[in-house]
Length: 246
Image 1 (cartoon, rainbow, N blue to C red):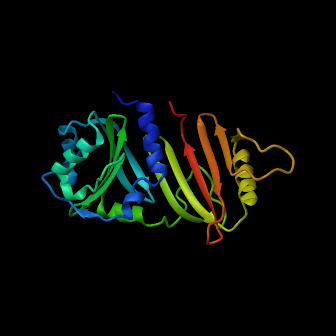
Image 2 (image 1 turned 30 degrees about the vertical axis):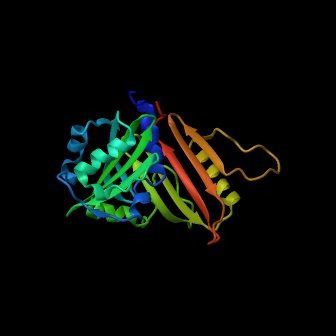
Image 3 (image 1 turned 90 degrees about the vertical axis):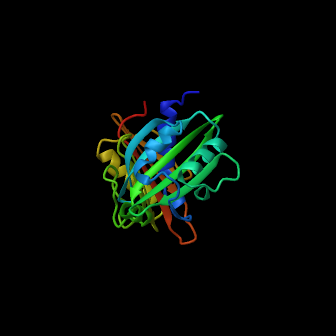
């Protein structure tokens, strides 16, 4: 089964927007074993039968990296075995299921894998960064890095990710301001800049809607508010797509 390129782009966006490498960064980072190295990882995956489905430069919290997506016709268990033979079996902790995560390091680089089952096939996401870029990605951004959507005044940046090839970016921030204050700010600033709220809030006293979607020509922006956590802060999730998904 040949993978759908649109689905691959969507999966990549989902991976990125859910902190693709952050989920792995909190786990153990292993020393790179086996004959393969970070520098020839793509060639190794190709030699093992993987076909490049997508390749892009991404930025996570200010740290750059290259994300490459490979399609394997084999099931996930066999693919994990293949990668284990090349990169070291101890680096891949897989006991069944549809997902396997691995994070490996060499002297100057960090290599991360997300291996996902797709029916009887397997998709492998490979994120490669230098050690310095990886360290930057693990830290919270020092400032608001998204330029396409204005930052909410006084908010604290928590996370940023950008897929440069796909024209998609995401940022999250925290604030003690109320959800309605957040909604009014973004609606005012974005509509004043030529954006149209394509899901407008109906008139009258209704419950707060946590999601607002705006469009300007081929661009799409989404602002989503997550209610207060234990710290008493609301989280703001901002997504921007430069061009409509094909």
